[in-house]
Length: 132
Image 1 (spheres, rainbow, N blue to C red):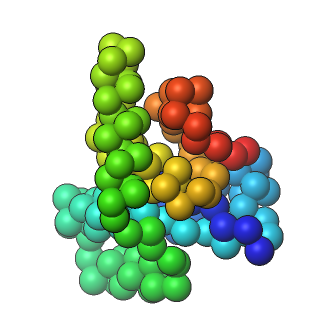
Image 2 (cartoon, rainbow, N blue to C red):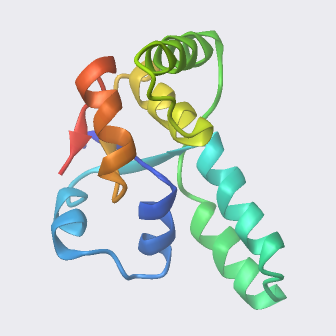
């Protein structure tokens, strides 16, 4: 089964079972993976919103089997290229989105997002493959 990286908005909606149909369809017969950034963002939301024990346990249970892409030199180099290129174009991108795109590039995996506006730039200028 091919693997796809899902960004934080997709992970959140998937965990809550509120994904739009076309995005859910793009995940059929794939192995979903998330970046270390998505793990951090999801855990931050739990902290910032003072989630209770039950909701936190649901999140940890959902996260448990999901493979995580970790940072390494290849990811850092991809982040540097994407970030610098966007800055040169006068279009700096959100830092966490850039890290997520860098993970998908460094690991050679397509990215599924609901936030096309920020990630389209990485596809046009950085080589990211976006689904659907």
